[in-house]
Amino acid sequence: MRRRALRIAAVGAGIAGLFLLSGCVYLRLLKTKNQLRDFDAHFELGGRPSWDLDFKTPVLNAKDVVFLIGADPLSTGPGPFGEVYDYSFEIVRSTPQASTVLDKLSLRVHVDDEGKLRRIEVPETFLLYFSRHVLEATLRKAGDAEVWQARKMARVTVPLSKEVEAELPSLRRTRLLLGEPLDEKDIEGLRVLAYRYRIAGDPTGVPIIARFRFGPDGLMRRAAVTWGASTADATFVSQ
Image (cartoon, rainbow, N blue to C red; front, side, top):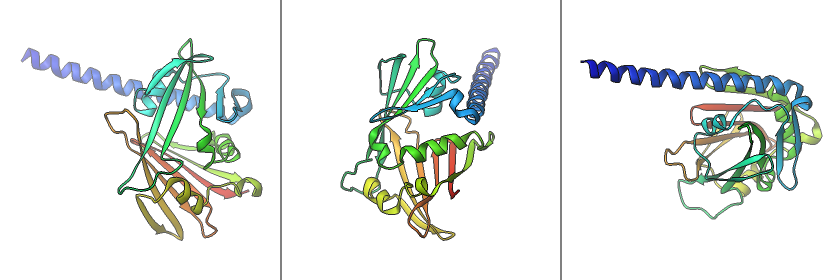
């Protein structure tokens, strides 16, 4: 009886610890979100040919990165700030297809010697799909995103100038760079394409589902990415 009580207590402590960790991560994410409202004070964009997001006043730490991505990095190595975490993502197909440019994606995360997230490095290949201007506009509006902690969802509306709006991914470019989707349907006058990725080397198989909605003009009007149990949803509108 005593052993059973100890086991129950241990499980309860573990669950409580998980909720505490999730709460701490959420608070640090909320602080980072608030920093996005004063973007230039806390962040800097750069990188060639990659696209780099530098954190001037970092809040998130290395454990947060692993927790949020849902897997350990594929490899680690030395970097300009301290350590670099390398991740790789592979598209999941329902049927064999010819390989495409975005079948595989990489991501580099730079952590400093104090264990703080200092840089996110997006590869050049990803910029073939989402332009620098579209990524920047989305980030600058992310501070105004609506967040539902219980539903693990963040939603934002991104107004774009005519010049940047013209750089939105098109339906044609999507098929060219990502291939045929796992699922395709029409919803409320929009064409919806769904794709799935997995984290390379991750035995748990955390699902990453991207749903892209395209308007009658063929341009993307909404992008929603569900990563495990969390969803980030962006709607693009004319400024």
